[in-house]
Image (cartoon, rainbow, N blue to C red; front, side):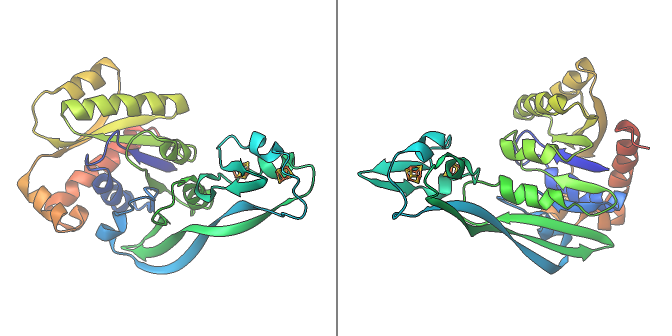
Length: 276
Ligand code: SF4
Ligand code: SF4
């Protein structure tokens, strides 16, 4: 069972839900927010395995290249350009698709590899934690996300996705059996929740909503979920003690006063996401 945790926007409490729910469910924690992975700051696993993420890029052999431009035509990412009779590669735009090599009728293109990120894993409190890290300055995160998710450990996995609804989130959702959308009861929260709902519905997987910073009153998010027949799995109360603990980098689940919030969310998730 792989549960993707999404939020339409940053700052809703997605990492809080992901890390604490992983502990409550005894699921592995997978941090797919590879541009800014911060779940390990809370879980603090002892890292024992590190793996590089490599991508291919083309190298053009000047002795064989006749500057016909077929590779440029084939590249849908505008990563190649012709300057005088030289073919230039803009390495950071290259998606490693291989189309240029196929298009070249002169066998002038070979592939080399370069590192764009890494995966780290370790254990804490009896769960496996794995995260992807995209190197600073690298614009394309999808290869890191794919390598992270292609070899998920056995058992249940909580997939902590990037905020928003970008292609990084789409690529993370491809590996999910169900999803939890974390939001906050504000107009911005509702706006971005709608986008996240639209996205998850395209995947036709069961999903539910957790409302963070809930003050117990009726709000637009609850009205929207009722109207759209979306299951609210639970809420995290808007309380100073919770905010203080979070700001210290502590795990709420380890505090007996807050543990029950996530035990309840875990049991509601089992029920609401209908897994056997
Ligand atoms: S397709 Fe091959 S020969 Fe033509 S410009 Fe590209 S590398 Fe050179
Ligand atoms: S591998 Fe794909 S993206 Fe990269 S330069 Fe070639 S055609 Fe363009």
